Length: 140
Image (cartoon, rainbow, N blue to C red; front, side):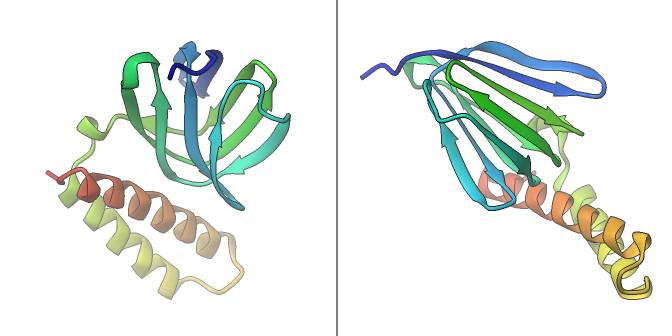
């Protein structure tokens, strides 16, 4: 059964990544997973690094590695402002494992509560989430 389409925009500091009518968007916010359909209740949310799934018509699903950002939803529109969005094909599992390890090292070396500690934790979450996305898709 077809769902009512609605416009979804995904923007990064580098520009527009996606801007089309779709049937559904699924992502992860700071309070949990969310699926957005047309006529969704308006909302604002902070986005966590995760897999961003955009469901087009006929069951086609686009998958992206999503960084941190914000989600704004209106009745017929969803806007995702994200610091970084990558295709799974552009990611390398070995590189991500190394980035996670380096971030974990920085976490243990940084003073708790410092900006360095918070930054390392953000990187650890981002690259860990992206690695999980790759490994779930068969890895590289």
